[in-house]
View 1 (tube, helix red, strand yellow):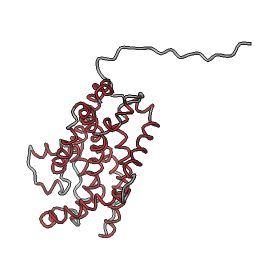
View 2: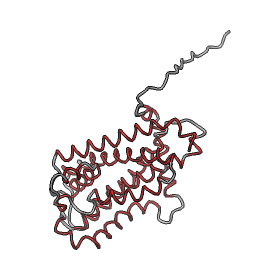
View 3: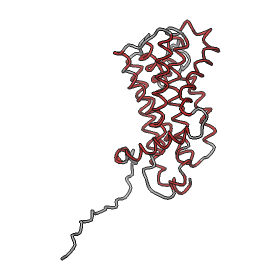
View 4: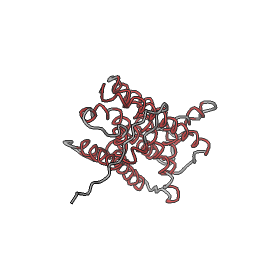
Length: 281
């Protein structure tokens, strides 16, 4: 009696397409592995730390204190309610972006031993820190709500849900920038020294510590400001939490299109260099 044999699936080898694909389908098929990488990043980030996840709470509070001490006296006239809330709300979404970019930039080099031994979609490496940073964002948002309650301020439920698209804008921008920097960091290891300087400049360009109205920008600088996707994410998230002047629809579209361009270009560049990562990492 012959044993039953399972038919083998044919594996077709095709030449690489001339136009590189983004690889999002492959990421979706390996979403369980992505969640594993994200969970590993969360555990590694807070392993053997003195305060653990409390750092996710302390960071935005420290930004709020510093901005309030240095800028609150001069910029209070432009804030929505207490200046401390304006600074804290901007810091919450900004730190999510900055931490995501910083960790994504070093993700391939940090996984060098894994890259050279087994195959997995390389894009999972820079995406995992962004997924992990969502945990910090949730904790920081809870801190924001507590501080708002201390000032007697509460977000309106019908407006608070609009924070989600702006969080997605920040995450998409972080994914694009993180993909760019992760690929560049494999070839040029001094990129890690450029990232903190880049993020510091980007922080001031995104009006984290002052509202857009407070800048009093005229054309064409107003349009240039909204070409920064993180400016749209910060302003939109702040409005969703605190209210005040709602960002204009055109400005939100401009920031969103810029974010999509950053995301698409970052993924394309990453996929273009993906095949040589294991050789030069």
